[in-house]
View: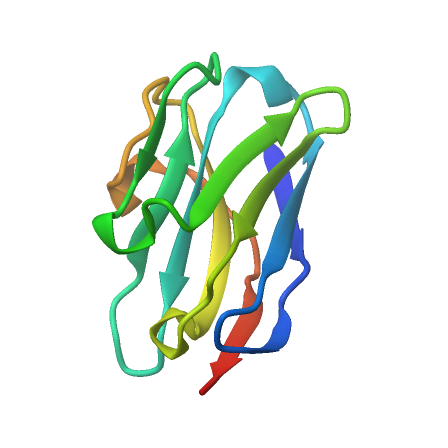
Amino acid sequence: QVQLTESGGGLVQAGGSLRLSCYASGSFFNSYAFGWFRQAPGKERDFVAAMSLRFDTTNYVDSVKGRFTISRDNAKRTVYLQMNTLEPEDTAVYYCAASLVGRPSSRVSDYRYWGQGTQVTVSS
């Protein structure tokens, strides 16, 4: 089992940057693929980015390609989401998730463990 704790959210102006962190406690960090999802008020939870188990493959939703970068540091048990050139449409609660499916899945149902979320607000 793994417990996930996100941090790094906040309020930023359009065009700015934030880096989200997701610390994973518990067992077998190296056994999981990780993803980031986001949920805006009144909307479903949507896929943002994911990195495979062997961190040799990444996957991004089209709207963030070229702006967001997912990475992981196994020694620090931490997954990051670097977000640049933020837009008001990026405003949401961002969730980190862990999956035993090795590939960087975009499906919510492939992720077993979830963090509590961190709020990202982008002002225009």
